[in-house]
Length: 107
Image (cartoon, rainbow, N blue to C red):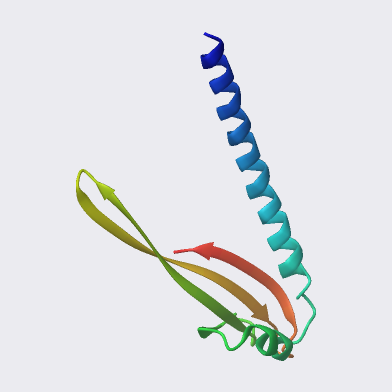
């Protein structure tokens, strides 16, 4: 009985720590991305390299899109399944080249 209670406490603690770590990661990302706002897009390109592609922001500016592909695979019932995800960062630059907005996501 004591073993079960101990095991339950350990599992709950690990789950709680996982949530804190994810929140910390999100805050770190937000801080890092916000620090680029107001910078010129040329500074970003010098630091990160050229984006994967560009798109229009619809207001005479552009969106610099950085993409990274990752593949996740697992065995299910003896069969191997694989899925590819694309993580992206979009940096919005106005017509003067100043960064004013950012967005991240996964496709």
